[in-house]
Length: 128
Image 1 (cartoon, rainbow, N blue to C red):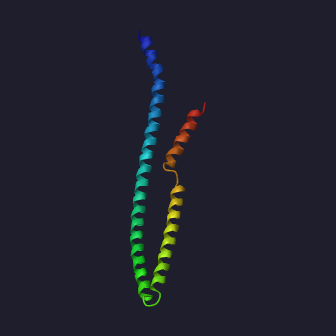
Image 2 (cartoon, rainbow, N blue to C red):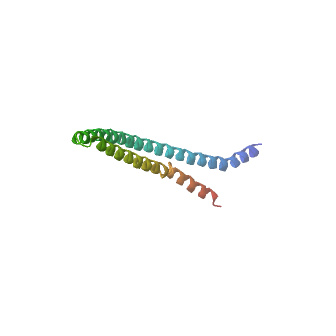
Image 3 (cartoon, rainbow, N blue to C red):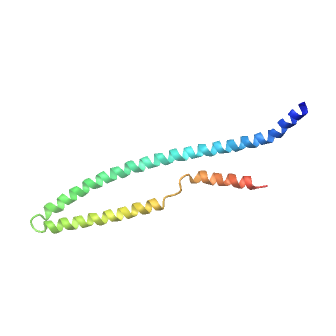
């Protein structure tokens, strides 16, 4: 009786070690995902803050430029000057929108390092 129980324990030993190793690898990879997610969040918050500040300052400068052009050409070409400024703003908005769309389409893959580690793990497990 004790031999059967003892042999079952020995058979489960390698299986338990294998499962323990698999769970350890999975835990490490999940921790890596968490670290990458935290880094990405910090980066996005920083970019968002700087982008909002830049937009606010650009808007203030555009308002001041529009007022300056309108005042300078008020007596002679006020409508033409305002139409030109409006066209320039519209073209700049289109260029910015196209660049933003391009930036979103060409964004790097999120969790690239984690995916590479999973691929390494898969290759190691495929070896005989």
